[in-house]
Amino acid sequence: MGRAGKMLLGFWSLFLLLGFAVALSLEPDPRGFGTHQRLGLPPCSFRTLFNVPCPSCGMTTSFSNFMRGRIIEAARANLAGLLLAVACAVQIPWCWLSIYSGRLWWVSRPDVGLICLLLMLCAVSALQWVTRLIV
Image 1 (cartoon, rainbow, N blue to C red):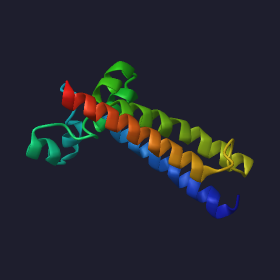
Image 2 (tube, rainbow, N blue to C red):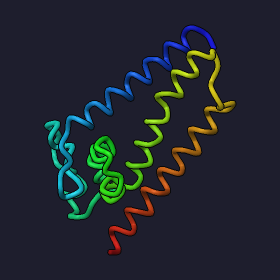
Image 3 (cartoon, rainbow, N blue to C red):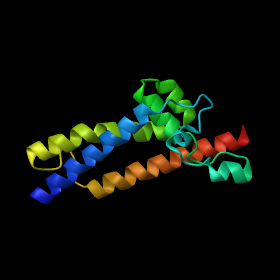
């Protein structure tokens, strides 16, 4: 891995740390969604227009709960959000191990790994969304 690759991994890990710092600074909304509004963002347009949650409703709340060690609450807010938070948390030490070793640690095909992760997150998000719409 060249210098540019190492710099990219370093910046990516710092970006992830910044995201976790923001999540930690936000008190999770007790409703299980809406925590993003504490950043000055508007309410979910999908929920406002159609009066049903969108597939990503509760994602910020999930991250905020994850940062406080409230794993059950994080899963209730958005299971895909919890899985994404775990995936992001694992990437931070992975980035630094990869920088230190000079190669992508335990990953031979990052493109395949990323596609698998995204498909899994989309499937979990869609399944949870459909479940919330039915129940």
